Amino acid sequence: MSGSAERRTFSDTLAGYVTYYSPTQHRFGLRTSDDREFTVHLPRNVSSRIVRNLGDDYRDTTANTQDMLAEGRYLFAYGITYQWEGGERFEAKEITFPEESRGSYVFEHPAWWVQQAAAVADFYLRGHFPDGKYDWRNFRTHLTLSGTHLPDFDGADVRQETDTISRLVYGLSTA
Image: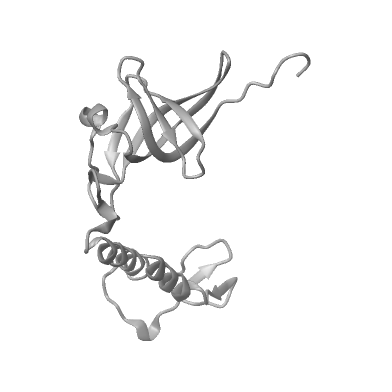
């Protein structure tokens, strides 16, 4: 562009600690783990929630967002960065709190990771055995080269995926 700065608009997620909250100016400060400071603007339609595990219901906290924006609180802010007078402006669209209350991270509950692993395993079982009959003796991933499942092996354009079980093990291990 000749003679003018390039205008960019993009979405991103910021993670960090609240450094201040200004209800009258509808914004708060956010310090990332690498010590960068951002100003997060709050539009009227911003929503918030508690982070949830696989299989959990959505836990809306929009009505309590202002009360939850306490200094030192860790959060994730998803929003849009606009070019604005004097620089960029980050406007939050959704805020996710990993704590139910200060100092109580939901993923530190004893059952969190067990539930995560069970949800991953259930996902794989439903995907491979949609009828609910778990017969591993004849387990095959009959896939076409495009990834379509076929009911029976006919030898044409089909291969056995050897990494299916390793993906399951990886998913459970990361959980």
